[in-house]
Amino acid sequence: MHSNTPAADKFAFPADLPVPQPLRDLLQACPQLRYSSASVSGFFAFHAEPPRAVARYFGGEGHASGQFAAQQLGVFGTQPDGAAIAVWRAPQGGMPVVYLGSEGGGRVLASDALQFLRLLGIGYGEFSLSGDMDDSPEEGSEVARELLEWLAGQGLAVPPTGEDIVSEAEQRWPDFDGWIEDAVQGRLQQSASGSAAPAAGAAHAPAPEGGGSPWVQMLACIGRRIDDPVVRQWLASVGAKPLKPARRTTTGPTSPRSPPASRFLPRGPPDTEACGPRSETGASGAPMS
Image 1 (spheres, rainbow, N blue to C red):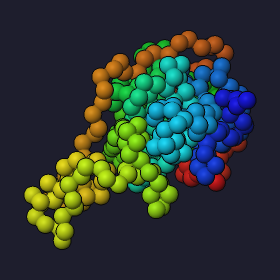
Image 2 (cartoon, one colour; image 1 turned 60 degrees about the horizontal axis):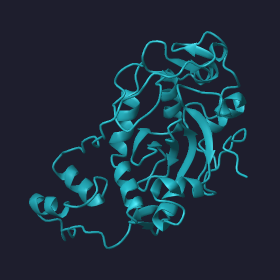
Image 3 (cartoon, helix red, strand yellow; image 1 turned 90 degrees about the horizontal axis):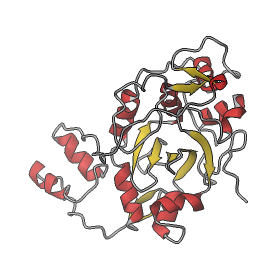
């Protein structure tokens, strides 16, 4: 039977998806954080979930497109409402950290695992589909002592809000929610490079041959996703940048429940030594195969 408690430095990622080194380093240095009872920050807890279970976010185990999408995600965290936090092997490259809503939808939270751990250090109660995280957590928010000490040991500052971390990630990967929709609707298939891409036959306007005028190029963008190369080419030609993706209207970050005081510190710089040795990767966040 599969356990949802990750091993010391391992989760249940797809075999060809590496666990980011910062996650390994943190759990090797602070193994007590890997248990579901150890709320690391607010309602977040580390959690291992195999791809066959992750497929439920896209329609179930028998859903081919959803199964393939699940192979692009490495779940390492959860919230009590059933939402999951995962590393996403993005089609356009990179491994951002994303939020998978328990009732559908998702959003990008951080550019990589290291930035996500800084986001956890802020102390938001939980993550949701909406909110720019431009506000500080409510007074009394708490973060696990071990996490703050580990971040300090890496020389990483915890920002007062998550706005910059989330905004940077959303600018780089603006259409994760659209990728989820493609998976749910059965439109994902394996591309020649091995990544998940929209299936052939989708209703898109044909790309203009030989470039064409900006007007012709704009017409060719109709029906395409914001991260489609044709769309990005047109945006670059007119000097525009994609807007942040629209968000569903839900309650923003909430204040966490009250965990045992002995293991937690109020948000702020720790005054003790880090809980383990400094990571050999430092702040680079390079994944380890």
